[in-house]
Length: 167
Image 1 (cartoon, rainbow, N blue to C red):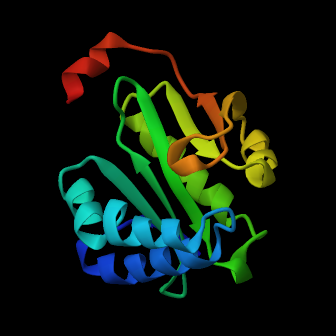
Image 2: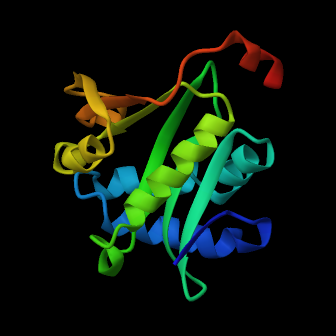
């Protein structure tokens, strides 16, 4: 199993996996909300724009060349790297793939000068992030798209104004 940065020629394969997991792995999302994400907020053109303009980083987990997981996160902004999505094919869950994706993204965020990782998640997966050093810092009972958001973060460094020159 390898973790690698999404290459342009692998985008279609990644997007197939993203769509599959969007439809299968987020039980609190209504069918209409899932359709909205895939048709509007996270359609292929939007994701390509973010990637091509260095606004988001996508890492892919592969097993024998097959995409089995991904993480999508922002590049550092103001020293914070925000994780938007983490997904692993059900058959491969519990094997440490999500952990490897998260750790690889954390290394990337540190290399960008981030001092903080942040994400929104659900109660069910909160223990996973806690095992990786994240702490709950807040909740929104009816946050983005009407979803209950657990807001978690992890300190990964110290703020340094010298990173302002990197953009």
